[in-house]
Length: 366
Image 1 (cartoon, rainbow, N blue to C red):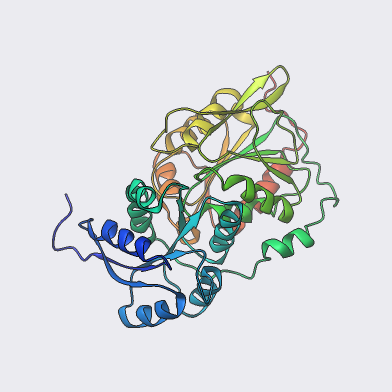
Image 2: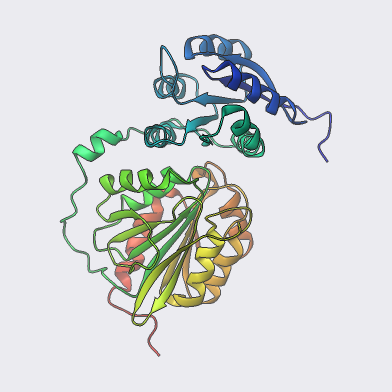
């Protein structure tokens, strides 16, 4: 039970809709561990409120008058970094802006449904308050210089580079991530060579966002990146991202691996769930799997990563200092699932070194 004497998380709501400000304020104030200490109708008003009230968390609408949410977020992260939860529409434009916000340093996002705003925000009350709680204890970082979506599409990383001899249809890299994971996964993928083994990724994301996320990564990486489609063959040099709201798993089909994308009940409260992906890898990939657990809240995938290790996989976990939220890696480490715990920047180079040392070796030999 929440102790009444514990300090509350102080939240400022920034949204141009008066109805949204009122509803978000009511949702926040209905929680025993948080309070809405201020609201702002645009970034200029927000700037003064933040300076005066020094909140713990900000909720920020993506599309704002006078100065849009992205411009305000970029200035905020440069001058006064604070945990920010974006509030985004479920449109292609809204999804693209939200992904850019995560690049700029936002902790997470909440999607506005297409329903009327009153019904929609009330239906998402649990989600909104959970994201605020996570943001309040997340590690906020000033973003590193990174290409924008437009720049990355205009200047994609070259795919035709010196081969390292890593190509293998047997080996598969499996990545699980949640809060902070969109950027952590990007950091791993952009540092993989074009002949890396196939990569399967479960990132906790809502429907409507993963296709744009895959497209953005495809413009940055030397491997191909796409949203996974049910039944397609798993190919080296390709990464497959679980579609938002659907589970991703891997299966054998003769001599090949294929991906399965299916609906189903949430697992560990998530859909897609890292547990589903990692359990399938333990079952069918075994010693040819490389498991990677990145930043995220909770324990999704921790037990299954241990199952992967027991089946012969080689596993890496992101270390606490480089995580936005250390929950998922910490739980996996506690399960004894990790062979090594590394800073984010070292994960891809270490993995490539490991792959190079076993290049051409099938670990399924009898």
